[in-house]
Structure formats: C-alpha cells, structure tokens
Length: 153
Image: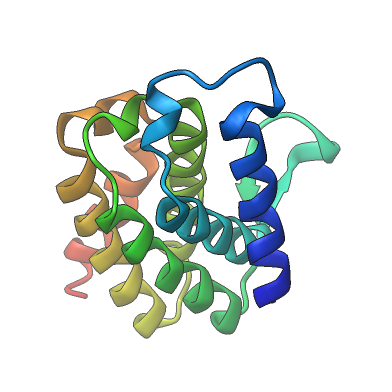
C-alpha cells in the first residue's frame, strides 16, 4: 500500500510541477506532505466508495468495520494539514466531497465504535473547513447525527 501511495503522490506532484501546462499559484500550496496524505486518504476511501452504475453520484458501499475504520483514520491527518487557501483547490474539494460521502455511509452503520469514530471525524471536518462546509452536501450527515442523538448514542 505504501508503494501505491507514493506512486499516486508522485503522479499528482508531476501534474503540479508542470506536467499539464503550468501550475497555478494555488497548486503550489500542495506540498509533498499534503499530496502524500491525500493519496493515503484516496487509497483508503477507494476501498469503500463506488459510483452508481459505474458513473454518476458517489456512494459509500462498504459495510465492513475494518474498511470504514481505515478510511476514517485517514481523514484526520489530511484535514489537519489544510489551510483556507487549499480548500479552494479542486483536488482538495474533491477529497472533502469524498469524505462527506464516507461520513454519510459510516454514520448509518449499526457498529457503535464506527459511529463514534465517524462522529469525531464529522466534528474534525466542520472544525477544519469552517464555513466552507456549506459548499458540500452535509444534510445526510446532519440527519444521521441527529438520529443518533435521539437514540441517545
């Protein structure tokens, strides 16, 4: 897995440094650390994420606690390295959207430890992206958290 992560980070780094017609000033914000954490996040999330009929909207498919936990654990380090400027970049927006999809799925599980972990990650997401959270479809996350609160979890 480590090889795939560094390979993915290398691909993105190549794109950033001029493989596609010159890097914008914003893309210079994507340091090796950010790219590495994003690649690790993408690797973990890809284990449970799928598109409807192979295309269209993304949906969290995995019900396995191990995969959910792995993906959730990859979120916090990624979010902690982001700045407000980075949140405007398309690759970061895509990753945050994938995190939202992960949280929607993880919060619907019956596994209490996964729900607790997902709730913690939800708090980290809102703390990290601030008002930018309004750009993402978080209604399902709020609905799932509300249901858990009503159940006393």
